[in-house]
Image (cartoon, rainbow, N blue to C red):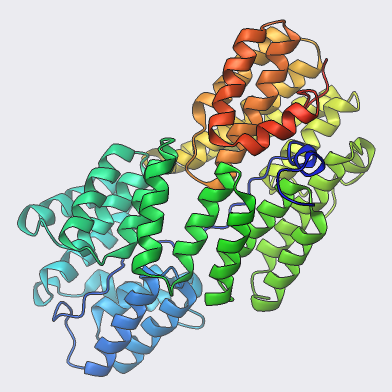
Length: 466
């Protein structure tokens, strides 16, 4: 069915998706610097390291790991290659990463370049969970080398992870100013501005990223993610398919492609995306299983098949506490809708416990975005339970708390924020607060008018409380 049609949009408002398929990790050791910045006597090893760094700039992480392993084979004493292999240890195959770490702990840093020395000392600090010391080392290095794009990239990522978006933006702007071809800087700037609802700026940054690196998959994937947020679904599909054409094993794009189809209610197309993913990356079994489960639960939710959802408790998709956020949310809603409020409360208690345990374990290192999302999910579920139980005033408070925690940092979180707002609009209307409801609905419309059109086509009902 063509985009914008009533049937398609009616299906769109029946779902919320949180597909966490993020490529890339670690200490942010990205660069395309080909100068004498690394300590090795092997030109061949240096060339492999350059290719590893170039692959990481593109977010081709498995490729980067393969090049880093080869660099280390060519020069077993190559510290920069050891740092890369350690950082990419989940992709390192049969490499003895414990031995590599022992080497990094004992290496004489005085023989290294200043950048290598920083990276080793920072890695040691992070291994000991000394985040303040790791940050201090970066700041000290940048005082002496303020325009080193390699380390500016690290600082920007640190700010991003800490949720310090203003600092991340400031550092990224300096990064692309001193190194205009440092393409990932434009990507970070796109996500920083997207998280702050500055969508026109985000599109400019992502478009610049694509212009500079049209032959890389990630610029097309990033634009596709923005188009999902804005409800430009045809544009999103085209951009994501281009990313896959360029790099058939670029996992992010399959998850985002499934998300577009799920928003449209095209579950067959979403399943096809999962099948395509399985063909190109059979080793991504957990990701594929999660995607299959999300599709199954969302389809059952759209059909209001609450008993069928309840019957899946204990299935491969629903092994507590290792449950996908979508599965948890839908299981909770099914419990409330079918009168099993005690079960819904138990799910909320479980999530609350998981959040508390994760916070205690992570301490200062906690991922602010992930923590905010988990807490928003808990507050959203409580709001749904309260709304369906007729406690609309309390539901408003809980749903507003969820909204305050969420932003547009990614397509999945953005769509959850918009979905939560539509639930809140319905609850406000249930209370007779029409002015407040329509003001909030207009805020959703500014971001994603297609979603609002679908909501209006369903008589502004998500939960069906009126």
